[in-house]
Amino acid sequence: MELLKLEDFASCLNETFDVVVNGMSVPFVLVEARPLQTPMQSLVRAPFSLLFRNCSAFLFPQGTYSMRNGRIGDVGVFIVPVAQEKGGFLYQAIFN
Figure 1 (cartoon, one colour):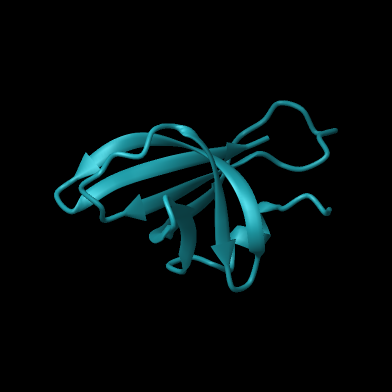
Figure 2 (tube, rainbow, N blue to C red):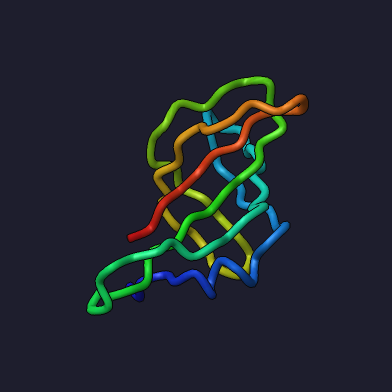
């Protein structure tokens, strides 16, 4: 499997990534994809951060979720809840 890079996700901004939880599809929308600074130049891929929005009133615990997107396909992503909004929660994923 090829390592996913920032460019792969950046082309999916504002697209839905579906997560199946207890037999139900739950939408997470990719709202930010940005590079992270690194002092090392010899990394396999440049580190980056993703921010997903979920409009559910339920807080999903941090963990690895299988996310499905039309462009990227199925990918396991470790997400951490980082903020609560009026209409749901924001979750961050860090790739390094």
